[in-house]
Image (cartoon, rainbow, N blue to C red):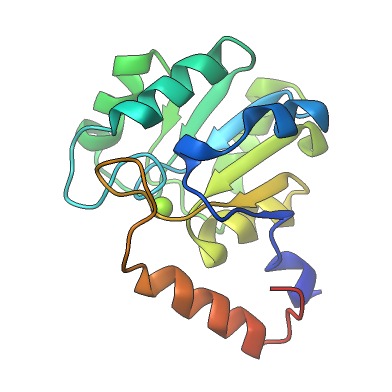
Length: 169
Ligand SMILES: [Mg+2]
């Protein structure tokens, strides 16, 4: 049970900005729920990297996107969302399910047709798997849109998940 909940459907080796969108579309994904901090916004940055913005604008031509952040700052999250005209949720309380449930209701799609993309195993992947979404763990993003060279937190989470018995990670 725990093993399944902490195993992303897709363990990406790239950041969101290099994630092949076609592979999500091909497997029937029709909407995206995206984490913001370190998935779109690098740490200590207030602007998303240009390559990540390009990725988002391209993706938006194909499917709806909702930003779901645990960060309480409407200023930080809202400024990214407003720039792209995206709906967003702050203080989402991941891995609790209530905020994500509301987003799923708004989207009006079965969870299996919605991908949740984030950089954290114990918040993003866990809440997505709890509700049956297609979960994608991406590398934390740096200001150039590339994987952070030091992502101690995700490495720690992956080690902890392995220790808890999620054998496929
Ligand atoms: Mg994050």
